[in-house]
Image 1 (cartoon, rainbow, N blue to C red):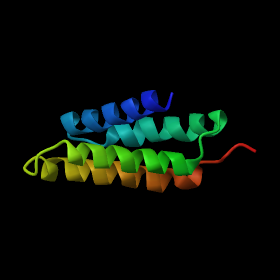
Image 2: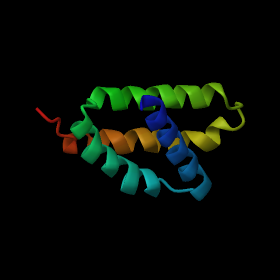
Image 3: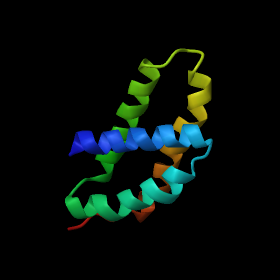
Length: 92
């Protein structure tokens, strides 16, 4: 299921790039993660690691000329999750 989740995160990143907007991540993915992940026992730290791994993998696979295009979306993706951390309540 972790691979599936990472694939979903990647799909949202590319959707943001294609739409030229962070709205899909801010309005959908972050909200979904703050609701679902605690209920299935995924700690916040794992989501942070997923984001770091995903962004590193994307940078490793893109040319230097493409990276400036992606960077604002990657930064915004990370920021959206950082801002949502306070809404993430881990289940006991």
